[in-house]
Length: 160
Image 1: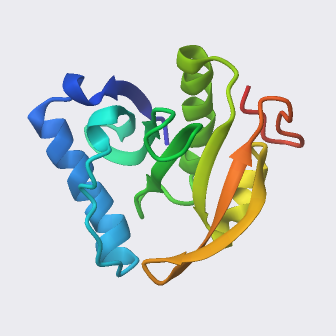
Image 2: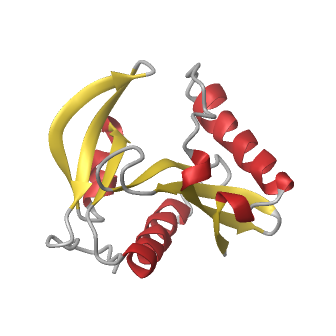
Image 3: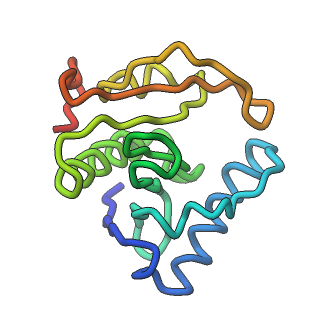
């Protein structure tokens, strides 16, 4: 799968792009994961939105939250690939492109995520480490993780 990437601030998104993002996030988080929650949490306006398209179809997405909005640090959230893109390497590419854009825009800064616990090993490949804070969010176990600029990722996946 060859993806085309777009990186936009909320104010630069078209109405169609906002609608598509919200639909994909609801498909993955609300329907597939059966989490009833308010996705439109007021943070989207303070974010960059990273969109990965297969043709015209949005199949990979993450929002990059400015420091001071969710956490003291820059954060990545709403990280997803659609069912069509899973198992194709799109998730790895999403993280690599996201980390590259963060570094280009914000510099070599720490990045915090709220990871679904079953994905810890995936995020560790990109230099994220558990902070030890574990909790239930929407009845799904989560772990807070931090990627320090002083601890670049090791192993086969290189995000810098």
